[in-house]
Length: 386
Ligand SMILES: Cc1ncc(COP(=O)(O)O)c(C=O)c1O
Image (tube, rainbow, N blue to C red):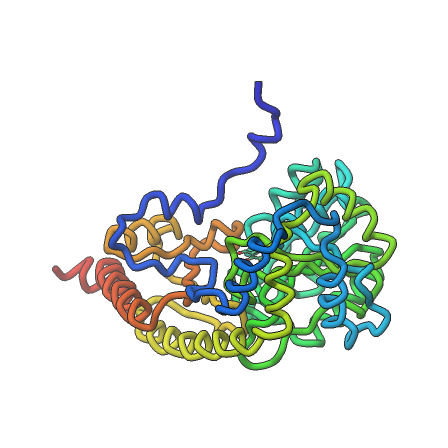
């Protein structure tokens, strides 16, 4: 009764952790800002629903929102217009519409490992083969071009990139973006660039792939920018020849994006980006707090994230990531096991700092005590000289 493809994908490990958690656990597993949306956009949403914006709209989104989104990309490519933009139901739907429009059965699609949980399943669902390329802690989780290049075959058609990254927090420097663009041009690959955290960076701004090559498609979202993950609104910026095909798939998934949410986000893009900057400022302070606390955790090491709101520390204990995450859960702390993001996430945890400073301090205290016990248990002294 059920199609075979259902068996080819799993519900993400992140969800499983939440289901196993007690209500009093400290939650450092969150993949969304712990802030309310800016109040003017909430007011705009309410006003939109009161004033009749409750019906279907154009498939590709409201023209005024498409135009406004395009304006944010004209510094990178002056010719960008609303015709390059499709408003979607979040980055998630945008990624699925891209997979449907761009990957054929049998194609190979390069995906980051560790990487966001939808890239590989989306490729599989359309009959393509995800080919993970490694991101290593020792490289600050930046991709190595030669590691990608030797995975390219005549069947490789696309590469998914994600900067700032979930789960690592890495932000590609300009040189990495340039090298990836050159690689894509050399091998005639399409770049699907997931830039949903582009406004959440701490040291240097994110470099978009838009305008660097006509092979790049940008996926973005209002979810993180305005703390509106529940509104389900995102967008694609694509070269004109690809807007039709991606838009057609988007139509068959969603018909059109939410009309009132679009009205609200229109207000947000003109009035609320200051609130986003204040949120990022707070995330920066928490990132520093987390780095200080993690430095006191024995057996863990960590690259400082420059974007998004995650750290991805590695550990040297023999336990698996799921065992460590389950042990922490029993001790009252929710984290995400690193292997939820791919095989190379083994021996890592994802810790989200979309949580209050108090929760972060208490949660990392639980982690430190847990790590001290693990380290004591596996230290030669405890083993041979009880
Ligand atoms: C890297 C990345 N891409 C895309 C998404 C999808 O976000 P949304 O569908 O809420 O826009 C997320 C959400 O966590 C993400 O972390």
